[in-house]
Length: 375
Image (cartoon, rainbow, N blue to C red; front, side):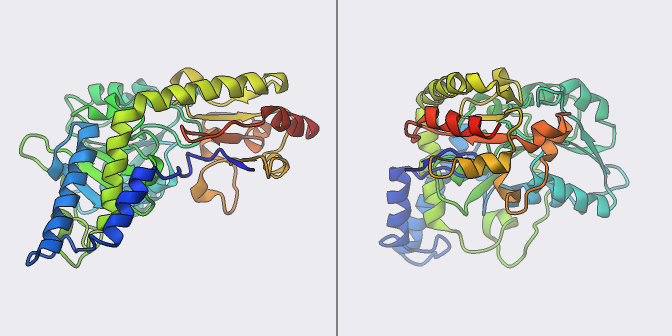
């Protein structure tokens, strides 16, 4: 039996989530926008409950939760939604070289529209120094966008410190929290974070649903414009019939994440200790500071072992990856690891293992034996 070790790509679904999704796909199938009967009223009530469940993780308000199809759409809305902002006064954006493509590619589009983008590098440990962000910020900086947790290395970025240095600056602060939402709780509750992107399928919920959380600063709303038109849903920022079953599933997943985050993290820490102990004879090179990593992921390379050969050798034992699932169909060297300054052989050999509280015991002896044969 193959053990799934690619939870950063997507997670299994919790049974409670599956049951909730099924209920709202079958017996409670009403449209949340239907005002004239009880089916619509119950659907709307279920959506509002999900907003509350998601908002609670972030100490946000119900009305600050905008549903999208996932973190990729949320990132696009948070960035491209500012495309019509007055570039004569605010034309500068600061982000990092290790962002997900769902942030980097919208930033390229913003450059085409006349905005100036500064991408700051990480240090060799995989995180961006707050001082480097501070140096990049200008008086005309409109947006600072920094991910919560890197999807390839699992390294947590210094979001709280960046929020603090932005305390006296008007720039909007966006955090792509696809990998950290529901796992590292406290940081995202910082009220200086204006926008947070999240996906349900990273926290044991269904695929195809996410959210952009938009905090108000006093009476001021984030000045976003919609990317699509055709309805007044989601505060006129994201038109279309709400996917009630997926939204309900997201809400249940969020509630479970908040309730069980500590015990899930404890399981993952024990698993990581066993993994590192098993790999020790191979002398792996760990990419990223383990002291700053979430406990459910590790990125490493082994001298003389190519990642593609390793994944092929481990088929039937473990399902792993060598980077982001969004770019795995046509492998190119990791832009994250390149930005960290890793040697080419380490980048080519990089493997990402990510697990969760559902993960079963792995035959590490067999894994090590097969990897050893590749050297």
